Length: 403
Image (cartoon, rainbow, N blue to C red; front, side, top):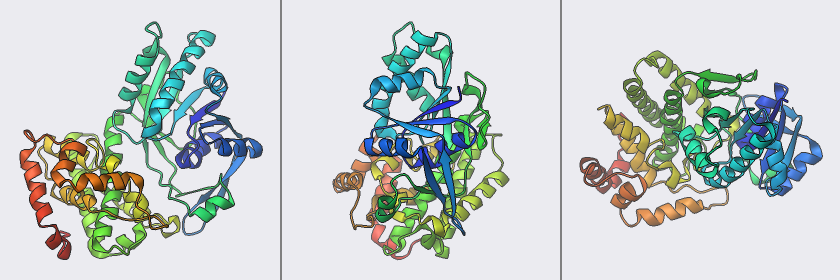
């Protein structure tokens, strides 16, 4: 049957994955740890998305229901007869989901034997299919034919979903805001079954290149807006406000173009500079969507993850070094990120960023080695360069070079 079992009833799950499949005739079954939200989904069997643009538009998503994650046998039953499973829980939730997935796949195998299932990995992570394969293979018995029965579909999640004001959440806990963009890029070659006829899916042959495009142009560009915007003027609240400053706009665009040069060198023949430039300008237009109300805080927070070894900034630097391409602008983004202290609507720094600040206070070398994953013996030149930039950071702030 056309049923999607979707782990994660969060903003991306509801505003993007769920609505794409629902409007194409799938029943969407959300699995989530938030029992109140699941109960409300089952009471209404629908929810609203507000598309934020020049003129707001409401979309009502139908044919949905939920299963509370703790009702484990019910979750297994849903996996057993799903056409597609999707995971959209964030990196911290993956270990728990893996255990449930493995048991559900095994019960599906015992009930349906040779019926394969495709798992769409709606997470912004590099090498996601490898991670899922390793974790599931470790949890499943040796006789389970994972390579034959499980398609692990990597994706590029480009849809932007802002933090909603608390008062709007209290008005309707199921309603979610999102931008108009509605394309899900995913791995064409990884499906075990036929690719579902769902409007908005954009299958690609070389998925790893497109994952890198998302991470090192979209995510890096977005981060550049937040971190440079905060350093430039700590009173800026929204990404569109930062990009209305010509100097910030110019720097962000040039940083994204530098990343495009790196991608062109790393994935020769996959992209053209014309297509990447067009993509960059479209992203900048989307970043300036005032109706979306996307904040510098949301885009920049969670520094421990966003400064990780394979994430948007450090991953781009590593790629640049591997193909011998310039990355000076990306270094400035890294340095600016270390000084990011934006707060939410209640004036609070996120818990993860508080932990990052404690790490940073021990010295930027500590951040570079313990968090970013640079190796002192191998990356000594890079670490020394960043330390020198850090030592001059006050002057850098006073007369930022946006060229």
